[in-house]
Length: 591
Image 1 (tube, one colour):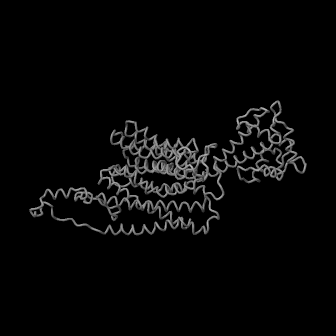
Image 2 (cartoon, one colour; image 1 turned 60 degrees about the vertical axis):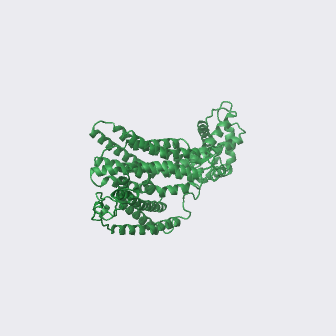
Image 3 (cartoon, helix red, strand yellow; image 1 turned 135 degrees about the vertical axis):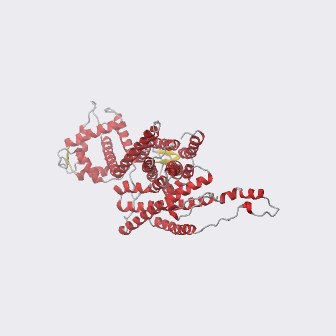
């Protein structure tokens, strides 16, 4: 937290001079010469041709502003220019301010999450704040000016929308694989924490994630549905039909946004419930294996029924006081004696769940009959999961071992949180001051993002006019660097810890950011197109978003291990996206 605060303080020191410089630039006025070059008197040496050649040199063209071209100052006082170099400078300055705003929003969100925890804040409020800079840039790109101006500038918003999604899933995703790679286990096909001896082996090194990361990737792939719906309905021939298609896409996007936020709110509870159930199954597996060892491999009789004599012997062994009932303390001694090396869990909680499974008389004890019936039920569950048959011979070994291995793997895939992983050791010190600081950071980030989103869009539009480069490509490449750099750097640093848990959190955050980008930012964009009655001519851009999200989403939805070669696939998709848009729009005229 201290490092984060000092990092933001350094940014604040850099930002104040930049703001002062912008204010000083607005006070500078230029003076045009009243003379035309043709009115000048020749010295007899330099003729008009050389004068014209000088005036048309590339360097001169880059610096000059034609008297016929004018620019409009944003808010009536912020600087503007029609030159290439001037607009490039403004893009860099405004881009840095948006990066500064995104950093403040991110840091403030993290502080608030430490104080209030997940749930409503972590699931609903913070994801929206993370996408706020992008959403504001998209909003102002089509909000101001006439319909013609909005139609021209809204491509900046589409470029940012596509660029952010593609950059996170290609360049940042691939970089996280490269910096987070560990040696791959040959037996379990998963990465070994903090062991990186195979260097850059394309198949021998990589990263592993938990099953929740797969769920996040699937949700991300689903989030492109509004894009697909809008694009398919654009095939309607009537203008009103295409306008209605945008409205349908907007409603669907908002519905997915609300559903995703609700999932984020309840996801910690769902995850904990799944972990508890898996731990309980591990207790089941351990007790059954313990019973198998005492039975010398024969839990079933020749007619494939449970050998109750073996179960009775185990019951009498556990029943230390010989009262014919198993108490919580006696069951706890059994659980402790089995020594579950795979997991560390609450033994009292495991015993209470065991009693709840077996106890039918609700006396908080387990008698002989309840114990036998409970073991029968557990064997049936093990047979179903382990893929066995009621064979009294060696196959009993096999399905119990399979059940144990599958349960261990399921527990590992769920990604049980290690002590201290992602949590502060001693809680938040001085929560009142921390809450105040977090609120100030969030307010400052939101104000800066709102104030400089419009000037940045104007600078991109003016730079496009000066260079004849389409605004989409400028915003696709440049703007995501401003709004997503802080998140990208944090993801790469976090992935460099080379652990399954940190890799899972890193990729889940990337998929979550793309999902929020696809639904929240798209909702803003579709609202602009619908209410301002703009023309939908973004077919190539939508196709790129769908291809990247579906390819990476499908790729990450059904596997938890990513060898190093997968990073090159991700890197390839970035230039492929740019080339595809250029070919479809400017070669084939598809849009």
